[in-house]
Image (tube, rainbow, N blue to C red):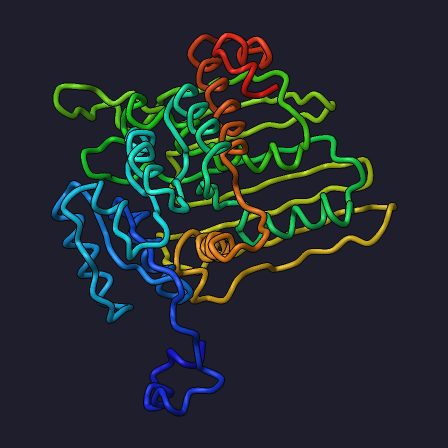
Length: 396
């Protein structure tokens, strides 16, 4: 990162050796230039392996904002497309990144796949299971690839947690998994779509698909039973848009049983003054606690730790884990940067570990079952839930 420091800016291109960087080899189009779309633009420019060639959004002010912000970290000129088809079919473009609101993902994807280009699709992949199932089927026969934006698996503390629990097997056989997030409410969005279940898919789909993806990966089995309790207690109780009252949940407890005997839980609270995220994994030989805290009120840097407790069974340790500060500040504490590395690696034909459409589908199944359980007050048998939603053949 020396090349970006003020004291090194006098070094010209001809004298760059340690600072030398290959020219971008791929052109991207960002479809949807809201908060997450602009994060992807910033991270792509930082990584430097793919260039943001153009942008498309239905909102002119979102395009204006994205273009203005892009000038702060890139001298590239952006193409502004007038319609979605033009954005997807431009022969100068190598790959597409879909960063539009949740409820538009499936319709945008149906246009994008006609291009036969590699596609990045933000999470959640859809707002209902039928659209998600169609995306899985589409992905299975697609001549290129579709990567789902479940980037929490690239957070530093979870990379280390997976390594310790699954690769090193430091905990022995994993038996229980507990995830919790305490955070402030959903931020404002254009049109405030994230305040309504029918546009977002519901809080457990919109927000917690990340965590269900992590839990599924750690459990290494199919979920068999889901029970959830939660609701809307504090946030947006008096919020209306176009005469419709917000119905988005702001807290939940979810319990998941897996076919191999692993049990998991999720605790979510979205009316807290700061951010705290934790995962506790317990096996028959130890316990792991991975935690991230971020006090944005004090504008303090986040702290991220992984602790392994072995007791009499071995060595215990506690580690501070992080990416470099520039990456931590680039978006989602550096995880988006490594998500981009996986995407570009796939563009170049390399084998990568990234979220597939099927993995996105399973995160949707747990989230959707939890939403239904929360609404009905009943625990759901997942096999019966899969059959009721006509997904048995797809998931056989």
